Image (cartoon, rainbow, N blue to C red; front, top):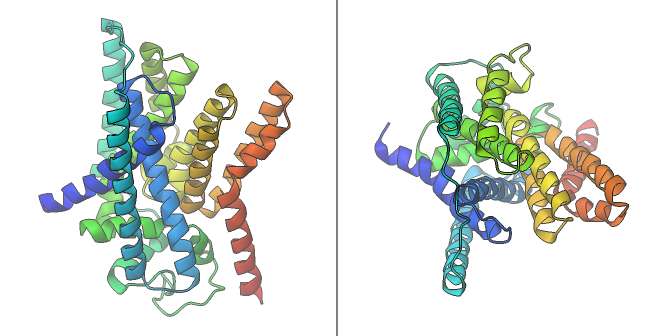
Amino acid sequence: MEIRNLLILVLLMVIVPLLIGTIWAGLVQIDHKIKYIAFSWLTGFLTMMALTQMIAVPMVLRRQHFHPFQCAYSAVLVIACVIAVVVLLFRWKRKKTVWAKQEKMSWTTILFVLGAVFLIGIQTYFVSAYQHIDDDDSRFVVEEVMAVERNVMYTLNPVTGALSFWDMGEVRKDMVSPWTMFVAYISKISDIPPAILSHRYLPVFLIPMCYIVYAMIGLFFFENNREKTSIFLIFISALQMYGYSSTHTISALMLLRIWQGKAVLAAVILPLLFYYLLCAYKNEYQIQDIIQIFLTTGAAALTSSMGIFLAPIMVALGAFAGIIQTRKIGIAWKLLAGCIPCIILTGIYLLLRVEGMG
């Protein structure tokens, strides 16, 4: 693998989402530099996923080829990056960011932080370095290979390679949740084969992303206490390593097949949605919180058809808890706006099922 391919991969998986995420990070009061970077990366990656959903689904339904999607999505990412640079320059000229002064970490805190980093690094290394063959890759990775090699999006049967129609079972779900096209795009631009990208390189980015989400949840509950948050991460790491009681646990999804959309949904998106709901409650449901929830439900819809239903259920539970706590029914309408992507895609999926049965 050439260095150029890896640099392009880092650009797509780190630099671009980090840059795009600064647009949203400026709307939130974050006074810690590391937390600002983590928030920008996560929110930027969510934005990339939501944009994929907005662009890919209409093109898939019109049975277009992969190359037009690649061009359209590339153009949108370039525009988003330009907007991010302009916004950053405007903020820099207007007011310089003042970061809160960090207290010096004690030796025990440093040891706990290093312990958490070590465990996360070990998990990331083993998932990336050692092969796990998953049955679902016969559909997901094949769809990515077909997009890259044959320039199609869900128009060929991943088992036989023959032309498919609307009523093609499991693939119908992927048409409204085209995570594989997102992976195929990264594969095409970086020139890394989809199977190698999925099994070897995506875990290097996605597993640390999982733990960054857990770290943000820990910082929320422990009021920015780094020592307690590090202990929390060590505890979560141990649970993940010893949680392989089934192939369908979050531990198995994260440490065996994190490259699949449903694994990203379970290990990254839903915990992140939980964090954003906590922030929304704390901030009394400001517009920036609704935007974050909107992006997260859009990203959830991209990863899996289950995300189209699970994300609104989670938001509804958050709204129910908020209404009980605050006695304000208007919370439900605000959070309902954050579920618009899932509501629209639910309608599209039901129409596809009706058309398939007809």
